[in-house]
Length: 208
Image (tube, rainbow, N blue to C red; front, top):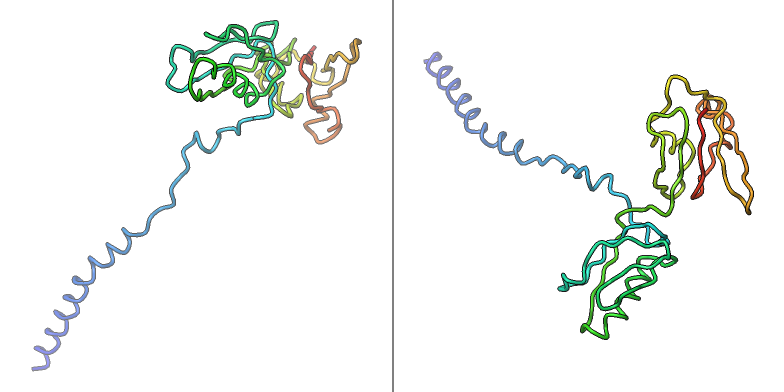
């Protein structure tokens, strides 16, 4: 009799365990992992609506439902762009929002309620130059608050012959050229941080 009760108790415990197993699985499966942000969303830079367009910048002009007018256009050296119906439009010296408004006002003579979007696809009017013993010398588009270290990084770093204590920045100030020293070794050690200046358009970094 005792053996029968013990055997029945064992089967009852096993039955309860098996019956509860699906509930445990569903509970575990119901816990959602936090969604990861797409890489593009995580690194997408914010649009600089205050950027002032300059010569040689490239603009994407989109007019809603007007594919014949929409196009990619470079800003000419005289600061203007060419568009159908409007011919020459002054672009240099304006922000993208201001240019959108100007183009919309001009198109109202020909199109009902024109909807214009202006996107800067290439920034060529604001450049800095890196010369000498770097892996990729040449001009580089300058973004806001760009420093000497960041420009050197964009140039791919140094060659084995670079004199890291003798780097300097050439800058035109009020019609004269000034030389600003940059001691790479000291700056990366946390010393002479003042030499890691914010660059201005047209600055040239020389790595001897």
